[in-house]
Image (cartoon, rainbow, N blue to C red):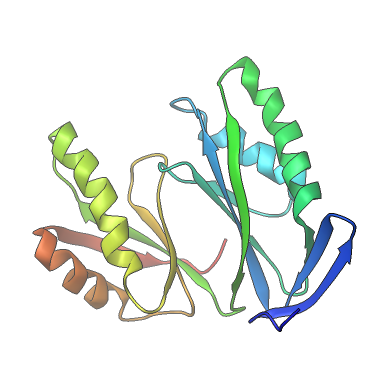
Length: 190
C-alpha cells in the first residue's frame, strides 16, 4: 500500500482499520431525521459515543463535526457502532439515522469562526441562501469546512489557521450572491 498524505500509521486487523492521524483529525458524520430542536440531543449522543470532553457540533445540513486532538487513534467501525448505539436512544423522540462517517486530517492550527450573514426574510429565498453561502465560503483556500448552524444563527467556519482577514475574504465571496456580511467572530476551535 502506498503512503497516504497526513496519515502517520495504518494497521489492519481483518476488516478493521485503525487510523492514527499525524496532526489533528476531524470526524465528520452525516445524520438524517433530526427533529426541530433535536440538535442538542444528537450532539450529546456523539459526545457519549466518543469522549465526553469533545465538542460535537450538528449543522442544519445534517453534518456533525467533532474535532480531535493530535495523535488520536480512531477505529472507524468502533466509532460508527458506538454512535449508532447512542443515536438509537434518540429514536424515541426523533427518527435519527447515521448515514456516513469520515475522518479528515486537519492541522493542529485549525480555528473556528462564527460567520453571520444577513439572509432574506422570505423562507424560500432564505433556504436557497443557506445552501449558497456555505458553498461560497468553502471555496476559500484556507477553509476546511462550513457548517450552517442548526439554530439558524450563522455558519461555523473551520479554517486551517487563524485568519484575521476572514471577514474581507467572506465579503468578496458573498458579493456575487448580493448578500451582506453582518460580522465574523473568531472563536478558536471548540
